[in-house]
Length: 248
View 1 (cartoon, rainbow, N blue to C red):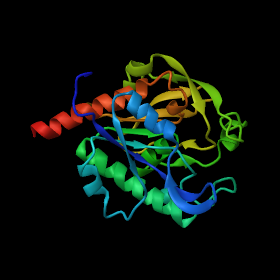
View 2: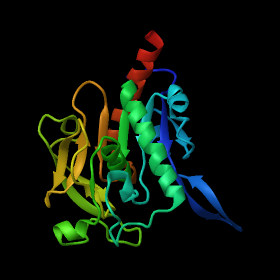
View 3: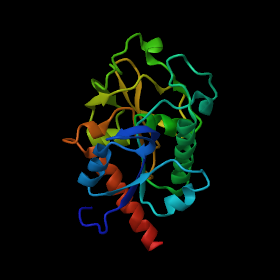
View 4: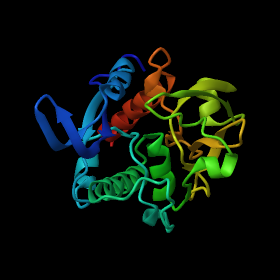
């Protein structure tokens, strides 16, 4: 796989919210650069996908070889048929726009057989896009807040993979994961299977079995760029997808 040329293009979704830069305080789309660094280190080229009207996803996906749904604020619970928990981020239009955009991208990418990687919120988006639901506040379920310590401090959680899963083939039986989430997958979306959990039984990763690469992890692999196995996996899958597009 190391000889593919050109580098596959992977779309990465972005935030849409107020942001400050110097004297400017504006409504902006942005993404921490560490996500792009992970893609670049793995041999891919990152393309940012800010939330836009949902009639655009098919044209956007036409130009991509892979899709990464990134982290961010809580999804609007209305997207999966629930009322808002008091600890869930209050829905705002910008985030509802992001929800709709990412759900449309996920559904379009899966229809095409395009490789998809979900990261933290991205795992939740993929699950909801396929009809699943979320635990809105994990401390209510497991009795502690160690998955999200607050103040931008990541916690380390040991995750255990399901034997013979795609994820197990990539990272082995277990791995230390960088976590920052107070929500998690509850009922699985259509076609998804659990491929990793932690010691509390929290679903930490899901995938769709089969040839097409669809994998989502509840942790933040971009926070540990000394281990880019997940980025390498999605970039290589994107390279294969690109080759298939050309040959078709």
